[in-house]
Image (tube, rainbow, N blue to C red):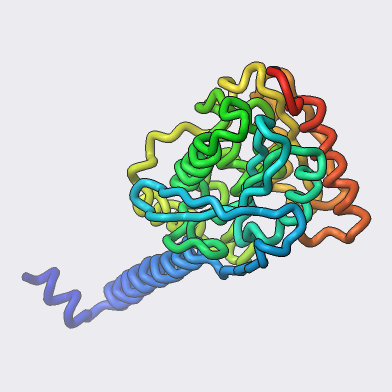
Length: 310
């Protein structure tokens, strides 16, 4: 009782100091928890951009394709038809982006007679739900590919994938377990979704605040505990033996440039690593965007022919 009484009615200076430090510690933990919880909430519910197009009059005559993601509900994508029985290239949009920002890349690939699909991941564009920064999005990509493969007018056994940051992670994770993927172009992928949490904390200017990154990663991990056994890409990427891989680095994001190089080092042949002048396809100047499109189109023409196997 004497100890509790001393805490309630301190009589010595060091007891008072201890109480102040304890109060500051509790306040700091609560503050870090609140800040981290808010940051993670913003990450899984990002600002959304939504694009609508007139499918009747849009060049390339795209069609709506519907599919269902288990546990997430209905989704839809825009399918740009190419040569009958040709392979399909699926474009996986980056974090805080939408399918509407990839239409010129889709058109560039369709011009070469590829079938092309663009769609929105959860919490992006027209899609509801929340983002898991790549975990659940792998199932969304697989469901979209299944819907395309069931059409009957495409080569259901040959797909190409393109993606950037979150989209690149999703594309590589799916390709590692899907024999239908024959070629993949990945710009600025990260090794695991937790890395994206840390990156977003840095972008918010709070990377140097003690415990915020650690607490945010823990909260994100609790929210996605069912994915705790998903291996990082540097372990699963070895399954891509024989799949053509193009890795693209951007100097504007050193953290993702480093993770891209790390994934490349673990990836099997055939693979190529290219340093871009700038990243962020949708924000590139027109000339640079055309050069980027030409690089992507050339990669798929070489590695994913319109007819035959590879």
